[in-house]
Amino acid sequence: MDTHEVRGVKVLLPSDDEPPVSSWPFPAPLEQERVTNTDFHNVDLSSHRLTDVTLNRCRFVGSRLMGVVLTRVTMADVLFQGCQFDYAMWENVRLTGDVAFIDCSFRETAIATSDLKNAVFDNCTLAAEITSTTMTGTDIRGSDLSGLSGLTSLSGANVAESQLRSLIEVMVRDLNLTVAETG
Image (cartoon, rainbow, N blue to C red; front, side, top):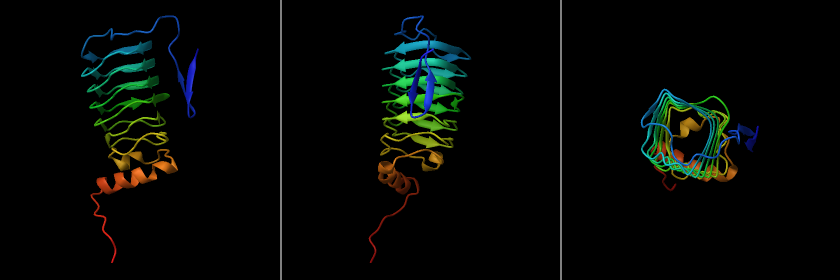
């Protein structure tokens, strides 16, 4: 069994028994399904809806998930590489095992009431609105945080010193602070 390790997160990859899948083999919307042991390459899930779905031992490479709606989706051992989640909506998404996002884009993505504990977002664009979400132990080092909102959801996350300036900008926006010169 192959694994992919990113910053301490070890994602168990799908077996090599089957070739990668290049088109989504499930109906839209997908509800109350279990998707396991599948390697997806360049799959287009734009504007799809996944509700009460479990993703386990899956890899998504170069896939478009723009505008995808994830509701009560559970993930364990899932790796996303070079995927676009722009304009997506996540609600009650739960990570129950290792999950990593590498080189992914989250522009104008809404993430609400989710549990993203211990995930890794490596070299991602996190221009998302994150509300009422748990990110304790989540590693967002190396990601662009300049368009992020939802500072309180980052409680307990791992950040790099180089990201502090972006986080100050997030704080000023989130708290609607007025920055004025002294004097």
